[in-house]
Length: 279
Image (cartoon, rainbow, N blue to C red):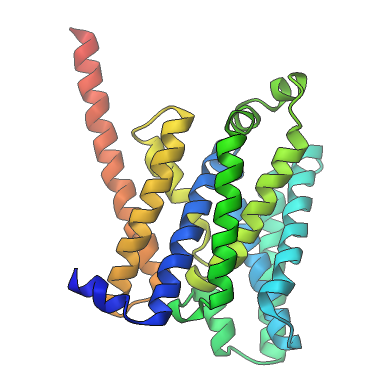
C-alpha cells in the first residue's frame, strides 16, 4: 500500500494511472467483439499506422494526437471496408497497412529528427508521455464507450455473432462496425503513448482471450475482460514503478501471467465438469 501511495504522489504517475486504466478498459470492451469477429490483429495494424502518423506529426511540428486520430480512423475505416467487400482478407489488409505505415514512420524519423525521445516513447511507450490532454481524452472516450455498450449491448452482441441475421433484423450492421472501428482507432492512438506501438494491441487481445478460457457467455466474457484489463494494468504499472522497467512491457507480462493462470483454471473446471457428467 505504501508503494501505491508513493506512486500517486507524483503527478505523472497519477496521469498514467487514470489515463492508462481507462484506455485498458476501453480496449478490453472493444477487444471482445474484435476477437470474436476475427479482427483481433486490427489493433496491431492500427498501432503501426499510428506510429507512422505520429512520426510524421513530430517531424512536421504538428500536434501528434490531433494529427494521428483522423489518420488512424481513416485507416480503420478502409481496413473494415476492404474486409467486408472481400477484396482482400482482413489479415492480409492489416499486414499490408501495418508494414507500410511502420516503414514510412521509420523512414520519416531517420530523415528528420532521428530517434528522439518523443518517437522512442511512441514506439515502446512511456509513463511520462501521458499528458493532461491525454487523460481528458481517455475520460471522454471511456464514457462514450461505456454508454454505447450499455445502451447498444444487444445490437453489438448481434453484430458480433451473426451479421447476416442482424441485417435481416433491421440492425444497422455497417454503422456499428464503423463505430467499433472508430473507437478502436482512438483507443489505439491514445494508448500508443503509454504502451507503445509494439505492445498496445495486447490490451485488445489478452483480456478477452483470457476471460474466454473460463467464461462462455458474451456478457460474462465482456465483464471479466474489463476487470482483468484493469487489474493487469494496475499490477503492471506497480511493477514498472518498483522495478524501473517499461510500463508497457510490464503490463503485457501481467496479462500473460493472468492468461496462463486462466488456462490452468479453465482446464481444471473442464475436468470437474467431465467428472460430474460422467457420473
